[in-house]
Amino acid sequence: MSVTVTPVAGKADLKAFVDLPWTIYANDPNWVAPLKSEVYGLLTPGKNPFFEHAEAQYFLARRGAEVTGRISAHIDRLALTITPEQGMGPGTGNFGLFEAKDAETAAALLSTAEEWLRGKGMTRVLGPLSLSIWEEPGLLIEGHDHPPTVMMGHNSAAYQPWIESAGYAPVKQLKTYDLDITKDFPPLIQRIVQSGEKSPRINIRKVDKSHFDKEAAIILGILNDAWGRNWGFVPITDSEVAFTGKKLKPIVFEDLIMVAELDGEPVAFMMTLPDLNEAIKPLNGSLLPFGWAKLLLWLRKPKVRTMRVPLMGVVQRLQSSRMASQLAFMMIEYIRRAAITDYGATRGEIGWVLDDNQGMNAIAEAIESRVNKIYQVYDKTL
Image 1 (tube, rainbow, N blue to C red):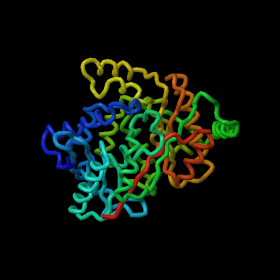
Image 2 (cartoon, rainbow, N blue to C red):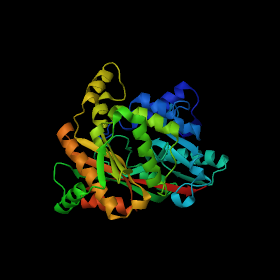
Image 3 (cartoon, helix red, strand yellow):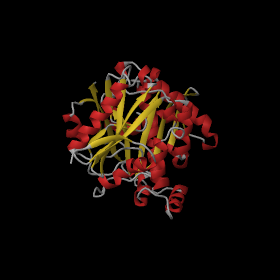
Image 4 (cartoon, one colour):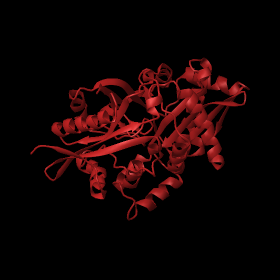
């Protein structure tokens, strides 16, 4: 039977859209089922502030009565204001939330998403982004043999040839780095850290969770300055900061987030999160009947194998300087110690990191980490 693709319409379709990955990955031991309540929140205007500056259409593919795939087509109006050199720009729409059981379904879904974007005046499609660059960007092309960490995606290895055969070309690779944090850093890095500790100009401090909003504003200010010229950067709105802060607050721990001050001014930060996926994987997407109790117990004092560094930034005026590297190594070392002592962690994951971000890639290599996953972003002219 041929594949038909229709827009998601009504609660039954939305449920089928959300539920499909449980069928796709039923036999994949490395897939981590998201909490369904989180997925509905992501998809729903009025709950996710992304939709204050974006619009989306979801589609389902069926072969007869069987749901065989899903995709989103969406347009971020803030991304349209970014210069093309930074990856987005005028005329660029996106696809995301892509899942398919077979090549025919994949082709039909991509074609439908492209048609919707073309009808909205878009001339280029960039993806997959699910839904924004700040959530789960890129298609996993290397590293399918181990689970993703918190807020990172996982997909079938079959998707790469299906997307590329539809005319999509690689634009950018996003890397994550794996690090054995039980080992001391190389002697050179230790000397750099010790030198920084002797400097009266440098202060590395933990965040103060009792002043959460103030600390979030400091970090956001550094982030916008540090990442403002990066490929893929789209400004984060105040609503999105509040939304993300509320979502992450339960896994924000003071000794895992550092702010670096130079001459009393905050100039860098490093955010580390315990890998929530280790706790939610056994829940299979539901907090009922007792999953909520298990998760609350875990959140009181997580004991995890893995810590993830999703965000790190140094203000532009210091980038590519020795001071930037020194501050980064100091924050990494302090968090490494806390991760081992307070949380029992043995592994760190840094990323994602742009493939052409020479500074961050050099720092990752200097502490003897290795690339463990690669996500690829594609584009196509419409």
